[in-house]
Image (cartoon, rainbow, N blue to C red):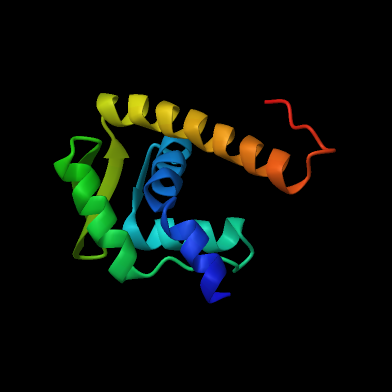
Length: 114
């Protein structure tokens, strides 16, 4: 399982950006839970990995942060900027190419078309 987590690690920003593209805005814990749900518990994103990634993407201009008061507490919601939307498209194209190439290497008899 540890080695599998390493495979996902390089894709963390792409995972976050894709979720934000689909859900408009999300807060940190919500992102971790959605990833866990989608992967049926196979991938658990820790706070120690998530928040540095979110802060870096914000510093790079890919994310905006909105603050809302929820149950008397301030909650930070993250959403893609226009630049973040464009970066998400680029990253998804790169990821699809990577998956297709890996599939062609691992199972050359099965050709993926997308």
